Every structure is written in structure tokens, then in C-alpha cells.
Length: 478
Image 1 (cartoon, rainbow, N blue to C red):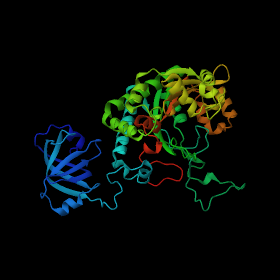
Image 2: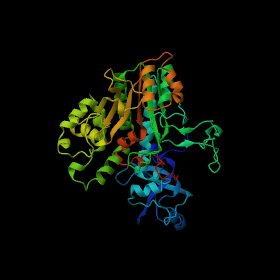
Image 3: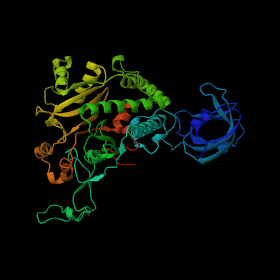
Image 4: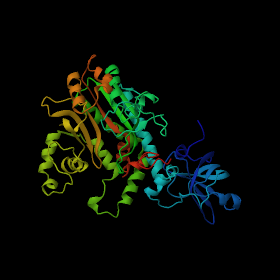
């Protein structure tokens, strides 16, 4: 199973047994009596201290041991003399795998800004902050698969290259093998996609939902978890051009079932992180507190672990969009004209409205339902009133909407009517429409942007810092 990792070593009782460890140097300091090397291999937020005696190794070897260098260290695991760790390694042998020139290695032991670290995304996983985020990201992804597996869902791989636009958003990345310098043209002068690889226009997917519904109408309960792409020119802290989406789709689930699943799912996944990522979450909580200590008390974030427990321990408040608008119209910020965006029935709620409901009014996560059909996607089931649809959005403190979903329209006539209303060519969705003619069934689903979840759980402020190599306008460096 490979060499012993530092995480395992730190949990081993020190009995002067010989151990070998491998990792990267975080710090090296020399005193009259000893040389202390802190090593980390990414398995844990904690370093292990390796100690050598002065004169034990050549000055040349010691000079090459600098922050960022990679070492193999052999020695005895002994009780630590210093505070802060139970065990340390008394070195008998050192092998240098790779040096890191201190004049060139950018991650010297000092505080680096997150903006600077984005410029060196190839090295930032070696920092405490990013190694913690990436371990939490792994734990959350594992918990997602475990949850769905344990609840009778099948993992469905939906296409990454698609000819449909699930959201009707239009902001898609085109996939082509055509020579851009010699584009084939039709008689009308338009690009002739019949000569392209797929014989038609193709794009990177914006969602696996439509294909996911096809799976649910055969397997009953499926989920997708894969990359999605949006060519929005959004340079914000909340948008990425490439991100991961979790999209369960369930036959025979109505709106209430959908809400129950969304609430249970997100609570279980966050609980998994609380149990399995304690050290990393404590580190990120302290990091955030340190960063905000200059702010007035009322502007500081809720401590991270408290915020996560708050979501896990509270039943989510459920109300309709119409009820939410009434609350917002009666609210102090609305009356005092403090909201940046106007409030009125029919608006698409902005993040400030969502956060007011969660953070100020209910002081707990909120599920809003039954939105006006004009502001929601064509595939959502229409309510009897003809004005609203069976949508549901889960709103969280700090970020607003984290999950968006709905009961899907199962009536062929109504769905076809909406397709025409929003201006989609039914021919492009013939296969989707056909499922409503061959054994249609009530069904529901939702989408959760995985990075939004990681952002919430880590307490980070920018979505570019919770994915290893972020893609956003004018940036595809790594």
C-alpha cells in the first residue's frame, strides 16, 4: 500500500521503532542543540517534526534542505520533547528527492494572498489552506456517492458533448473539428455544420438533467455527478466556466418528496465532513477568524463549525415564493429602500433577498417553492393556477441559493406548449418530449453546484479557491 503516511505516523504510539517518511519541507530551523525539519505529505493538515543533531550531516546536505524541498527521512519514532505534538522522528538518514531553490520557490513560510496563490495554482495545494480545502472536497464528493448509493440511486454518466441546451441559457462552449481558417459555408453563407464531426452543432453540456430524466424514467432513481460548462462572461466570486454538478432525478417523486430528499441529502453530506474533516475545518475556522479580526463584531462571519452545525441541526423553513415576496415587502430594508434590487411579485429573487430571508427573517435555511413560471425553466411542472410552477430552491446563509430543483412537467401537451412559448425548436428535443408519450410518470429532481457546496463548507469567499484549477474569463492557464 505504499510508504507510511504522516497522518498514520502521527496516530502511532512512539516506541523508538524505525520509520521512513517522505514529504515536503515546510520549515527548517537550527538551534545550538538540534536541527528541526517540519515535513508534510498532504495526508493531514499537521506536519511531523524530524530532528537531527548538529554535525550529524554535512553542511552541503543541510543547505539543500529548504522550504519546498522533497525528502525521504529514516529514523526512530520517539516521544516529542516539545509541545504541540505527541511524537517526532529522531533522524538517522536523509535522502533528498528534489531541491527547491529558495530564491525561486514562491511558497516561502509567510502569509500569501489568495490572489497571488491563484497565479501559482500548480503549487498552491502545498499550502495549509489549499491542502485542507482539497481534502474536504474529496470527503464531500465521497459522501455524495455514498449517500446516493445507500439510498438506492444509480450513478448515470450523462454526455459531456451535447446538441441540446438544457437551461435555454444559450451561453455554451462550442465543440468543433472544423478548420476555423477555412470554415465550410452553406449557399446562404452560414457555417455548414453538416461537415462538422457530429454533422450538426455541438456544445459542452450545461447540465446533465434532461438526459438524467431519461434514466429516471427507466431506473426510477438516478444521479449524475460530472463537469458542466457555462460560457457566461461573469467575473464574480460565485461563477466558474467549468464546475461540477450533482443532479439526482427521481421517478414517482412529487415536489414534497423532492424537498425532503434535498434537505436530508445536504444535511448528511455536511455531517460527513463534520465527522471526517475535523482538523481541516478547525484550521479553516481559525483562518477565517484571523482574517476578519479587523472587522466590527456585527460584520464577522458565524464561526465555521457553528454555521455547519446550524444547517445540520435545524429543520429548513418551507414557504412559497408568494409568501416570501409578502415578507420582503413588509421588511425594514424594503421600506427604507436599502435593497439594491426592487421587490415585487414576478421578480427573480436576488442574492440579497434570499439572504435576508435566511439570515435575518427565519435565521435558518429556507426552501422556497412555487415560483412564477416566467422566471423558471420550461421543463417545470405547471401548477393548477396557470401562473406558478412546482419549483423549489434551497437557500443557505452566506450564499443564497445552493440547490435548485422542481417537479418536472409530465404532460406532453403542457410541455410542448412551454417549449413553443420559450422559443425552443421541438425537433431538437424530440427524444425528451417522447418520454411524455411513452409511459409518462410524475418525476422530480434538483441540481447542486458542487463548488457552491465546497465554498459553504470551507467558509472560503471565492469559488475560484475551492477547485484545483479554476476556469473563468481570460483564464485557462494550468
